Structures are given as C-alpha cells and as structure tokens.
Image (cartoon, rainbow, N blue to C red; front, top):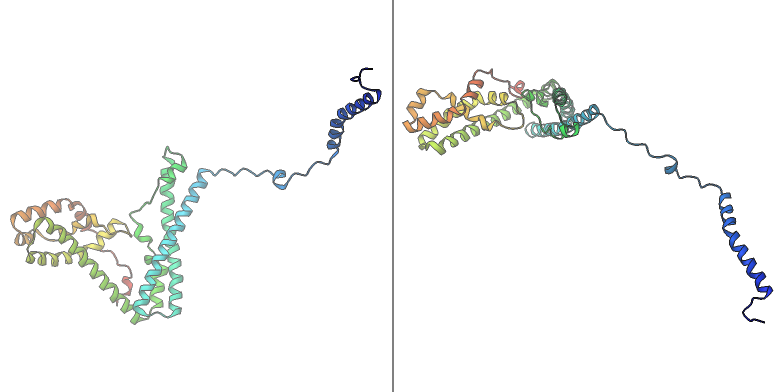
Length: 296
C-alpha cells in the first residue's frame, strides 16, 4: 500500500472542508443582506443647501450699509469729543451730558442719512457705466468726498443745534462761545504763519517785512479762511494746498511799498499758482461758523 495515498477518512474530511469553505462567503453575504440599513446621519440625510449667490444689487446694498455704519461710528466718536470739550469749558451736569449725547446720536444718524443718499446715487451711477465685475468695481471705490459734505456734519444738524441752545445755560453758552472764538483765532493766525513762512523761504523777508506781512495775512485768514474751507468741501482735512490763495487779499499798492523788485516778482509767481482759487473764494458769501448760534 502506498503510504502517500489518502485514506477514505482523510478524503471524507477534506471533502467536508472544501464544501464549508465554498459556502461561507454565501452565508456571510446573505447574513449581511439581512441586516437593517444604517440610518444616515442628520448631515447626510439633509445635504447642506448651496449658498444663494448675491445679486449685484444685493452686493451694492451690503457695501453701502457697511460704509454707512463706519461713517456713523466715526462721526459719533467725533461728537463724543465735542461733548467732552463742552464739559471741559462748561462743567456740565450729568443730565446735560445725557441730553447732548442723545442729540449727538440723532444728529449723527441724520447727517449720515444725507451722505448715504448722495453716496448711493454716486455708486449706482458709476456701477451702471463700469465694465468691471461688481466685486472688482466696489473694491476700487475707496473714500469718496463730495463738495457738499460739510452740510452733513453732525454739528450742523438742527437736532444738535437746538439741543445745545436749550441744554446750556446762558453763562455756559457764553463761556463756550468765547472758547470757540479763541480756537478760531489760533487757527487763523497759525494758517497765516504757515503762508508767510512758505513765502519767506523764497523771498527772504526782513524781520520787519515778516511782521508787517504776517499782520496782513492774519486779517486775510480771518476774512477768507472759512470761505476756503467751505469751498473745499472737505470736513476732515484743511485745504493746505490752496491756502496760498489768501495772499490775494493784499493789494498791489501795499506790496509795492513792502517789497523790493525781486521780492515782488517772486510774490507774483507764487500768487499765479493760486489766483484761480482766489477768484473763486473771494466772491463767495461768508459761511456761518459751527455753533455760531451761541454768540451773545
């Protein structure tokens, strides 16, 4: 008998092993197919809705809203400083401070509403005529300043002016008005000194000439500086590049008696750069000062 030949018992066991091996995948598959399906998670069962794309109109509205909110915050901070200044001079009661703070908030909102209307029209008009994508257009708008922007200042809104008149006592109004006059005089003299210093760099005035010309430039600044500021339309920045126009207030006869021939020629060259602005502002009506109503 060949020792390598399997016995009947071995053959029987081998046959059974093969049958079981072939059947296992079937039973496993059948068993898995009978398992209850796993419930999908909430995230899987409710696929996230795609964000609705904003229309150009929506994007413009959002852009203008953000700008307006930023304007309100900036202007109200400025009014907070104004109230602090009034308190410094007038020693306000707590009730007066609260009243002025409410008025400042209302004046800020009112002024920004006017600005928003103008800005809205400007942005939409430019957007209609732009070849750029709306996002690209809005990113390039930047800070736009309008000629009439000073009229939207909170200090010029009726709700503020009426509140200030009614809240301050007569002695407080007089004290604050005198403080404002002193600040205004300081500004006029400072601007005049800048102009004279700029001229002196080139024309080399004597001490006597500087003193005489400074006196005349202070008078010019007192009369015309507010017209120049009002014309520039910028409530945040002084019109420093146009301030040389104020030399136009000094007459030719006065200059002839003050300057030598070389200085006179240099003065005329200097004024020629600003003569257009001078022609514009000298005929403008004198603007009302902020808080002018406090004057006795």
